[in-house]
Image 1 (cartoon, rainbow, N blue to C red):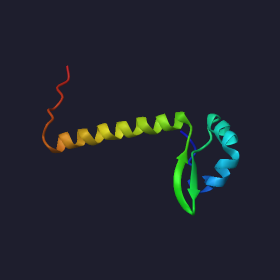
Image 2 (image 1 turned 30 degrees about the vertical axis):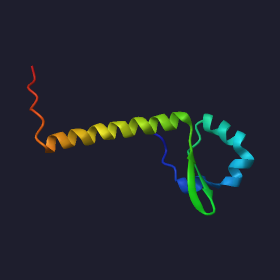
Image 3 (image 1 turned 30 degrees about the horizontal axis):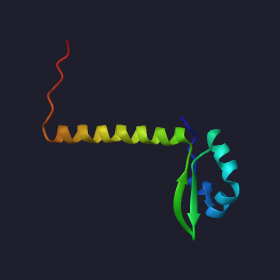
Image 4 (image 1 turned 120 degrees about the vertical axis):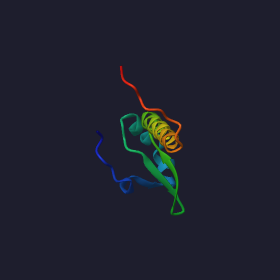
Length: 84
């Protein structure tokens, strides 16, 4: 399991992104934590590796499946499992 990261340490202004884009992208391929980009003091974007993005999307898909299953149970659209 990955170590928990405080994203407050990963906040950078858009000027940092502009000046260091290649370095940031190289770091992302080495497993760096997502970076939050701010503009005029407001969070505007998150930069993360493609692997991290895919993992996030897979997690969200599983959570959606669990939520749908819970709705089916609550609506009585399930039957008990009869083992062999």
